[in-house]
Amino acid sequence: MDRRPIGIFDSGLGGLTAVRELTALLPGEDVIYFGDTSRVPYGSRSRDTIIQYARQDVAFLRSFDLKAILIACNTVSSTAMEVLEAENSIPMIGVVAPSVQAAVQSSRNGVIGLIGTQATIRTGIYIRRIKALRPDAEIVDVACPLFVPLAENGRVEPGDIVVETVAREYLAPIKQAGADTLVLGCTHYPLLQRVIANEMGPQVTLVNSGAEGARAVRRRLMERDALNDPGHVGVCRYYVSDSVGSFVNLASVFLGHDVTGEVARVDITRY
Ligand code: DGL
Image (cartoon, rainbow, N blue to C red; front, side, top):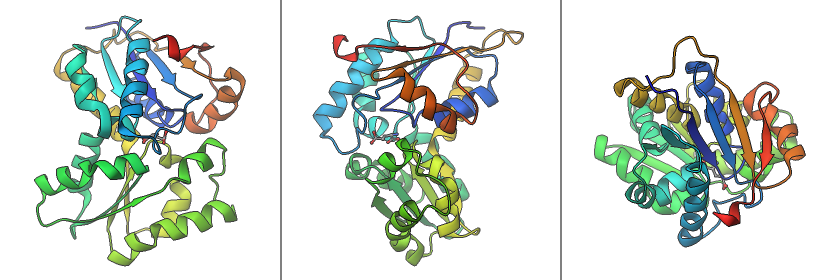
């Protein structure tokens, strides 16, 4: 048993889709969440900047005594995971590896769509890892830079002509290729799940990278016998680098319920 909290971070609110799944799977775990809301989006930035931001995010989280860190961000998982693992002794779980596994398991016809930030797509990591498991797979990847600002502004509902138009354009090549599985390779995208599902049709399975990351945390903690006391009721504490008020307003959309735990602002540039 390990009573210490789990650290989770993202560039902004997207990682809350992983918190949502984690608290459903493991209601006894305490969580410390950091969202770098003053510097979101990460996905349009250079590799060096993403690594620098990710190092600061981890340094802040490590000011707590944690048992593991979930990198609930595909952009950081694909760009900085190796650097972060080399520099930190704490177990780190990224979202790419479990999402690749889920995509390969789900696909029948081997045609897999991938949507993500420009940085995630640039690394080519999903293609390499999917091909390593299934060499005959055809992967159609599309960077979707407008999805994160739409999600961060709550423009996520079916019937919203702006998000529907953007989704139609981004998803067209994936539909055309006949993908039967689509990886939502950004933890913000599950918010747009209904719009994306309507566009892709019911025959296409969507892989939620935040949820896959949460499941990977559960597997890792179970392997290490590191779950919290089964009688404990988990508490989430949230830290953000920009306004607490705007975080609280939008976080409920990502979490699916109101924010109940403490929320505080942190000056991430000090880390
Ligand atoms: N939620 C993040 C991801 O999974 C990144 C969004 C961004 O900051 O661009 O890639």
